Length: 180
Image 1 (cartoon, rainbow, N blue to C red):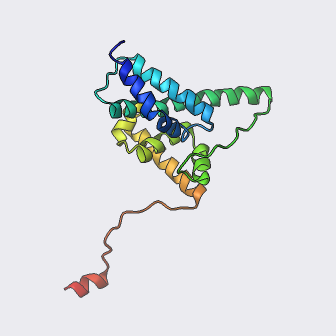
Image 2 (cartoon, rainbow, N blue to C red):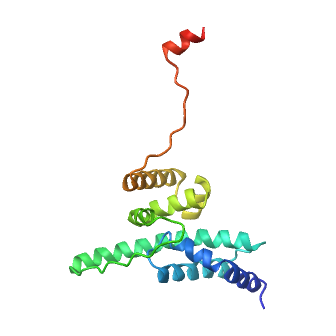
Image 3 (tube, helix red, strand yellow):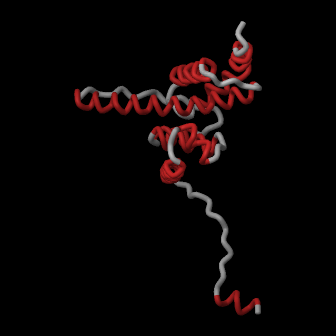
């Protein structure tokens, strides 16, 4: 057995359900999520990447899930344009709940563009830095900041929430004169 096969077997055995749950954040159905995980596993273990641990391999696969979802989003956008040109109706996909995520959040995430969704998921759910997200998605850091900002703003509008602001001490003439 090749050196990578035991690691792949262990990742699939121990982490597959969590990987599918993560994929459900970026695609609308369990079947698509499983396909996406399979593609990500294939990408992770068929290339030159070598992993020292199962958590390292899982992290790589989780990131590959998001980048593959962007490709899927692009393909769907192209298909939509073709269908619109042919004037065919699109059949809506059924909603499938993701454990631990409110249905309203799922719907709000699904409404984002593929890049916005990918940036929001990587930055806020995967806790990657701007630089890591940019490298993974092959975007500039500025583009990642913009897609993340636009995505979070769209989520806030859809959910009726506001983004937390940093607290900045307010200095007024009253506070300055009372401190003196």
